[in-house]
Image (cartoon, rainbow, N blue to C red; front, side, top):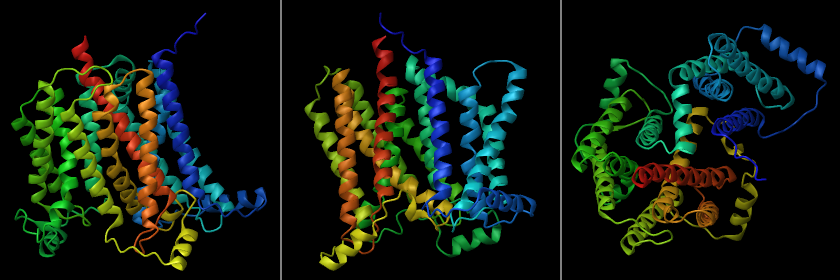
Length: 452
């Protein structure tokens, strides 16, 4: 007798339980790295922890406070997503404080364990900040949690079509907004904003800072970032390319306005034109795709092959420029030997001691650079295969992504200004896999209604 397939509700619950466990592991891991363990008796550690709890909270830094708030948000959200599976007021009233208590317990555990690792600071303010973040996570769940859960169910098991695709689009736009506002050094003071303008951080004349052709290459990521938006609005939503371009231009204008209040960011009107150009290119690709006939499984048209190869080469060139510039390679044996010895083999070790939010910006930028690789491979290769063939092609893609990430990190060994790190290699591969997964989901959303 064949075993029964797992029902969607159980699968979703297990997925959220896995994400909840992964989040807890990340917090514990990040609190203890680089793992310089020093044994002390439990009674001594517990007494020290009680002393920390009895003293007034001390604010280490505003960035540390904000980082801990952000770290605390996902825990209760995932807790509720995993366990809030039944309706009923009494059940909800029990589960909401349980989610918040879980967040506090996790933060307290991480802070207590830090007593065994010299160099790490055990702070009551970190526990309070993560608990505050947990309260935000509960509030976010109350606002969008059930909706997000139903969208995930539709995406994974029901092919929810247009609604799920729109949800993915909003998630993508939210990620872009986060990238534009980090490290969240916000200010709304008029004097500060005036100094932003005086220092040239608010540029109102388009293309006025483009002094050489290299500026075109440097700004291509802004074009690429909005291509998926134009493609989705034209190909999936059925909008005209002109409407897609206007929508993207409006979205970029809003983002640039928000960046006025982020002290470490530069607001440039040029970005509006770049985003509109990206949406136009994406829309034209989507319009072209609407006119093409369906492919047989395993077959790729010659035109799509050329376009996919061109996009891959453009992505690869931009990525090499971002991670290898200024290309001052050195091949001295003593230098290379020292560089190899200095490679950080413990994930996240290189980020210890850096401001948390700046580290978050760096991590998100690395992910963002490799997401297009997954999107390109999925759009021009994987989607044309099904069943076992698709799984084999996906495994091939994962191998290619790991090799390309390894190539880029290995190249940094020869560059004195760069720092090869196993963390970056993992992030690059993860970004590529994430882009591949999201693109596969988007293609499934786009093709299923046609098959019905």
